[in-house]
Image (cartoon, rainbow, N blue to C red; front, side, top):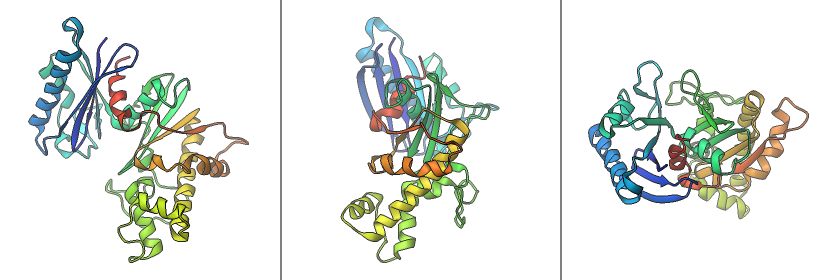
Length: 301
C-alpha cells in the first residue's frame, strides 16, 4: 500500500510517501498559497498526483492523510481552530475528496506528530503515548494501542489551552482565556518570560536558543529563566500524567531540542503527580521535523 501524508502548514505544504514498512520513498514541499483556499486545494492535489506518478507501482492509488493546524468540526465538517485562517469555515476534507476522487483523512498536526512517534518513533511499543509540541504554540495528541484518540469534540490532547497551575495569570491568550499553558511554554512564551525577568534591555529580543546557550555559558539570569520553564513544564505535564497516566511523553517542536529538559523535568514532576512513583518516561522525538508529515501518512493503518 502506498501511503501519502501531507503537512498543510501556513508557510509550506509538504508531502511524504511511505512504503509498506514505513520506509520513505519520496518527500517534496511547496510554498503554501497565502490566503488562497482554492489554490491551496490545487497545490495539495497536484502533490498527490505527482507522488503517485513518481513512486506508485502499477498505477496504484495512494491513500491520503493530511495534518492541519486546526481541527474538523464533528458537527459541520468545517475546519475550526486553525491558525491558517483561510481554512477556517471551509469543508476541506469534502473538497479534497472531490478533487482526488477518493477518501481523505484529516487530523490535527499535533495528533499526527503523536501518531508518528507512537507507530515507529520514540514511543514505539508503548501502550499510551502523549505527544507534545513545544514550538510557536503548544499542542498535544494522544495515541492508545497504536490508534489516535480524537475525542467527542475533536480536541483530545489540547492541553495548551488549559490554565497553568499555580501561577498568577496576567496575560490573555488569543483563544480568549487567561493564563493558558501556551503563554508560558511556547517559544514566544519563554522569550517573553525572560524579557520580563531580565528587564527590557538585558532580555530584549533574546531567542530561546540564545537563552539556552547563555545559560550553558554561566549566565545566571538565563539559567533562572530555564529553571522557571522546567518547573512550569513539570507542573503542566504532571496534570496530564494524573489524568491520562501515559507510558511515554514524547516532545517535539523547537524547544524539544533543549536536552536538559529530559533529565530535569522528570526530577520535578513527581511532587505534582498523585503517585508514590512515576514510571512515565519523557523522551525526545525520533523523527524530528518530519514526524508530523509521517503521522499524516499513518492515518491509514
